[in-house]
Image (cartoon, rainbow, N blue to C red; front, side, top):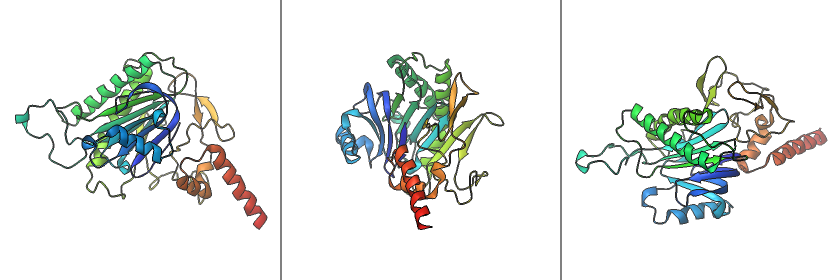
Length: 316
């Protein structure tokens, strides 16, 4: 799986078996998941055409794309990593529940965008039954998160969910009683309030705010850790002059054994990808190249760094 984002679009690439409740959704094999910012998603004349145009502008094949629309700028995207799952959330709650009694009045009076979009990617094969089961886990967690914030509604009228898995489709059960379902539940329960906090900040188009990343860590106690390149206590973790724009690596897990290794997981059976020794995305030249070319492959980045070294040696 690979992902990158602009100010308006999150693009997640991979070989997915996925289900989507969004426009043009269903269950099928796809290569790309999108979350795109529009001015008024609920009033977009033709959401399917909008998603198709976004896909084509990005050089993608529309039939292999699942897309969601939101009013939340991608600068307020919240990304949550928990072991073998990664969840992307944009959230706002201006127009929560179409079923509310009209005499009850508005639930919110601020101008935050009114959609909660959740994309959950799992690095483990799931059956179609498992994909649908995971939607229940996501929705239950979202409803509990909103209740925990004091709201009397379980979502908004335009909420959407994408569940995507990579690998052979074996997992049939992903409810909260299962290990995977519980991780999905915990990630969404934690992530929805954080995403709402991001979108409620004044000046929603202000790029002063950046996407936030949270990682569930088992080191020195189980807890959520917010990663920020601005105040990292471990800098420099590799070498003086490193760049940390991609400390939360969009290539993970690259599975390139020249850069990392498989180690036994402390949270589940089997092994997980450990890339602690890797410095590829800390090299300033590579970081600048990847920012300019977000869809660059791992092979391209390794070749780019090698060419930089060759040129440097020739000049010296």
